Image (cartoon, rainbow, N blue to C red; front, side):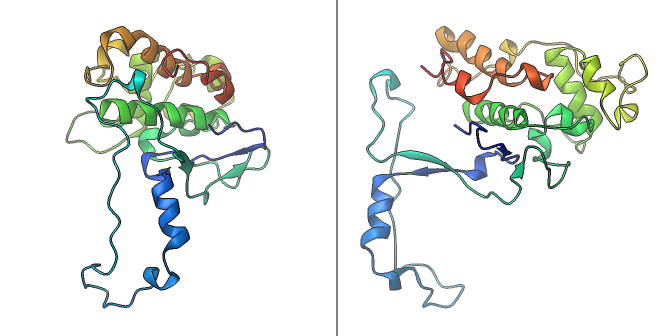
Length: 237
């Protein structure tokens, strides 16, 4: 897990940037002749000169408590194009919209914990098959930062005052008392009520799963667990 000990932040953790590596794919690259990977056919022709069969890692029907990780299996982060130093940001507007941390939206400055927020949203999406925050007031409406912040607060309560005080554009979203300027279309709710994938999250594991996600999605960045502590989560063990 990305542990930030090198004083940099990834800032773009999303499903498309998480790759799975297996021994079979490594063996293929090590032993296949280099010409195999050269384009020798017209651009629109079917790639029938080379084929790599996909490999199932886990099945939803398996008892994962007795399933071992395949040899050579690893998870890799890809696309470091937006990675940045902690002390010297390349830009302030980071992360995909639905995975964006609250401090980024309101311009309160960001640090390594944005990656923890990012990862929490990704784990939820992979486990539940849907995004947690889409930032849309209705299914047919476009994304808006107002709605995104409202969704966060519906689940996790008011935006922390100290976060608003250091924000450069809090006035776009909140009044001087920290109340949202726009009426929220989202009623207060709990994260537990959003868990509805019993095939992956059994009732016995729901509390541990919610505890993990909650510890990663704290509105106050400094309250989020770091990567090292997250490895001790009951749901991951």
